[in-house]
Length: 134
Ligand SMILES: [Zn+2]
Figure 1: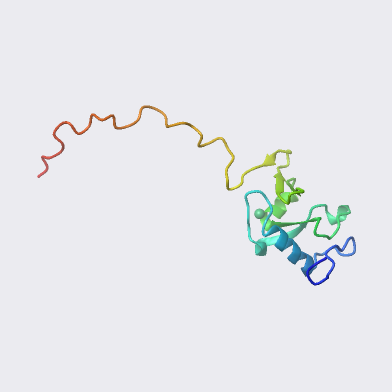
Figure 2 (figure 1 turned 90 degrees about the horizontal axis):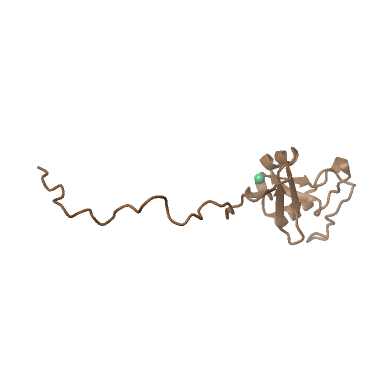
């Protein structure tokens, strides 16, 4: 039920997302749910996780907020799914999970120190410096 007592689960009665449901999805998702995106709600469409044509319902549980770009991706093989803890997970068409969030979980940046000897070995500055200018 919505805040005004408006039912948010329209089942198969409605194909288009009514404004009350859209508001509920915006409040829940806060923006595009595609991993690493974060586009604001006003760039987003309400996506049917299970296509309406395939029996999906017009309900909050079957809805995801996706920006135009990622809405297109999800219709071309990418997949988003809401976990029981409320987190959205994203998979690419080959089934691998996408982790490209802002926190960066890749292996880069973990090398201890740089390559080669450290620069500046303490021998500089013993001779006459460039004091012959002018
Ligand atoms: Zn997006």
